[in-house]
Image 1 (tube, rainbow, N blue to C red):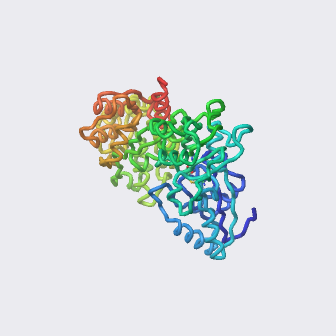
Image 2 (image 1 turned 135 degrees about the vertical axis):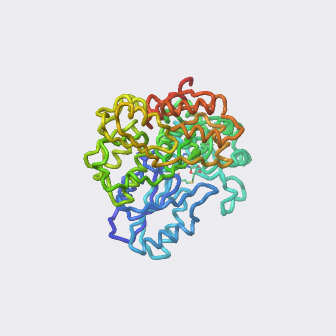
Image 3 (image 1 turned 90 degrees about the vertical axis):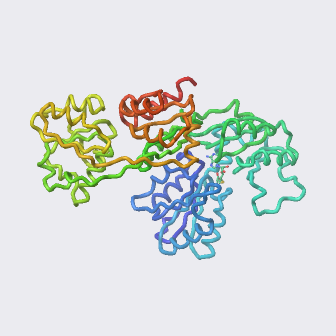
Length: 500
Ligand code: SAH
């Protein structure tokens, strides 16, 4: 690859999903890019290979909800390259295998923009491989066809003798989950025997990989029954049966499980990302949103000397406090000699993200433990930046120990209704996670009359969320060992692998 100084387009394949399957050339191009236009199927982990300041533009391409049209994408890469940018057009799999990379190359050529094509590992071969299916195999298959299940929709003339796929071998269908029964019937009409082994590989090479092996005649029903969806490849031919012997890849422990995340949208992403990395199908149900309420106390010029302790009990409290501080043009240094206490790992992590290491953390991650264990309370001036819903128990307990306590509501959580589709998804999920008491209360309200499936696992982060979940839904199935994301994720894995 040439390190062209400026104004160049790399049409790069990201590989099928497992970031380890991206080529060295692809990773180098990303590290060198001023802008990356990426597809939904390009592994998000690869975007971390870019340097700070690189523009990441989502050019989404999942059937039905295109974020940008193909022509818009072409115009955009040409425009950026002409402006002197090093542009990577990052596509799932291989850019020239049903990736429309050829059209983008033509657009560059027409505009006089220099380009490089970086081939990628195509899902047509890699998803099969991760399911234990060699696409050719001595004695079983000596020819590989790659087609799409949406051939009807492609603007290419069909060969009129219908013999295109008749030659025995392996036929891989991309984009084939929708209308699968029809596609498979068409394959049988083309002369493939109904008993031919056929496999469906969903999210191949990723933690979410799931595989169903059946025959041409039975695959559509088997896929529907197992609930597999796009993206998936169908592998048809004698070698598909080898999946039964050669399956080797272990997907994540949550593969095939649907898990609901009920946090506010802004905070849901880390939890959602962690669960997805373990293979879960994540349903975001943002039943609450967080609104920061400007707090007088934090904007006081003398923040640093005014308080002996600031006790943070939530990451929201930390964020709201520091944003109020930033609103007056100040940062963590304004805390001066004030000591900081943090309840829970998530709260401590939020402080660390602001450059503050907590001076004290109670032995258990609860407000009650903080009330009992906070040192040097007698005569100390203590600020508690909390939610508008927080009761006065912590403040009273610290006052009882001789502290001069001020509790200030720095944020409020506001109930947010769910879309009908989100509600359906919640009701059908395998597990629902509650990271706060309000999440449980607000989900209860958002569901109206409907009830969560009896066999769905309800998982709460910490005792307060657990109590609220019990009050709202009559039960809690698993409680995270402590109120942290790590513990919530661990509890979710435990809840969903318990009896399988
Ligand atoms: N250029 C891509 C294909 C793009 S078309 C490639 O070479 O892989 C999009 C289709 O690719 C999806 O509908 C699905 O059939 C397939 N696909 C992409 N990634 C996949 C994956 N990880 N597992 C299974 N199929 C995948």
